[in-house]
Image 1 (cartoon, helix red, strand yellow):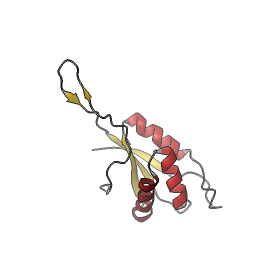
Image 2 (cartoon, rainbow, N blue to C red):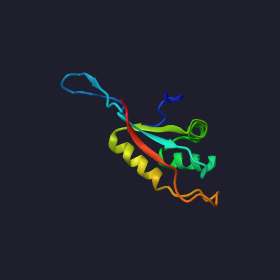
Image 3 (tube, rainbow, N blue to C red):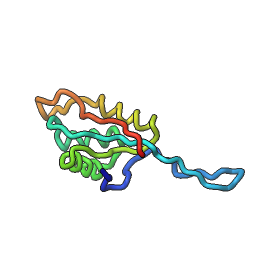
Length: 115
């Protein structure tokens, strides 16, 4: 599935110039964090989770909330393996949605390598 929005937040470097050769290099993100839909979390929870864990703007987080609701999943972060694992761990430990009595834990997410 192609993500309909540009990468909103990532651990990509802005590019660095090698002092000896004068060539520019850029670190490429080779991993992503995918968030999966469920019926135990509200839109408000998803926006709150993504602004806290992925440092997305409220607008970008809302777009992801809509996409996860409609498509069943959404890509919320691109970066290195370590950066993606850190973001995923934050998501998985975020906790239940206090707005819904049947919410017992965080949303599910996983790190995936890019092909």
